[in-house]
Length: 164
Image (cartoon, rainbow, N blue to C red; front, top):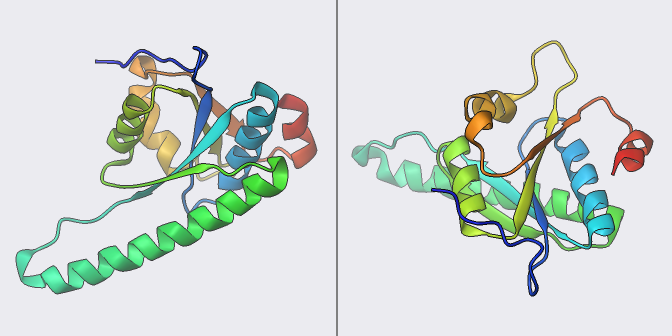
């Protein structure tokens, strides 16, 4: 079931969702989304997904330590991305941290925030492929609830600014 988008209704503002991961190109998506937010009078939601392996009950203490470290890393990554967005567009993005399957978590965040109008991803420009998030979402693109913008990872700041 897809939740009706309300991004442009009175009392709402459009937002774009950006995934902040460990790839080199995350910065391209943040730049595009931040510039778009300025022009559209909208906002940015930054999502960091922690993929936690199934934990064995006998190793619960280790699992808790791993989860705490992953949360610390997620907050540090969102701090960097938020600082970048603030430097580009003088905005303070919303921050969301989720655990689990990336595609499921992205769709759940979109379903729970009716103001998210688009997903912005950046594709790796190298020979190893577009990146793990784009690859994971490839199967869901046809039924995705919002438009997806894929920013080529090789674009310069000037080129992104001209497009956004």
